[in-house]
Length: 92
Image (cartoon, rainbow, N blue to C red):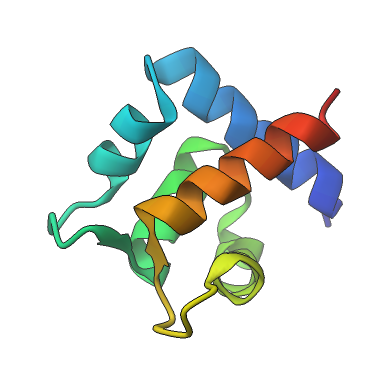
C-alpha cells in the first residue's frame, strides 16, 4: 500500500499539473456545487491521482477525518486550502 507521503504527493501533482489554482481544483471536484467535497468527490480526486481503487475509500475517509475541522464529514474550501498548504509544506 502507498504511504501517506506518496499519496499526498500524488494529490499535489494532480492539483498543480492539471489546474491553475487550488480553487480551480476544488471547484472541479465539487461535482454537486454545494461548496464541499464529499467522500465520493474526494475519491474522484484520488482516482485522478492514480490511487488504487482498493484503498481509495479508506484514504478518502482518512483525508476527511484529518482535514474536516467543522465535523460535517465533508471538506469545505477553507479546509481544502489548509490541506493543500500542508501538503505543499511537507513536499519541500
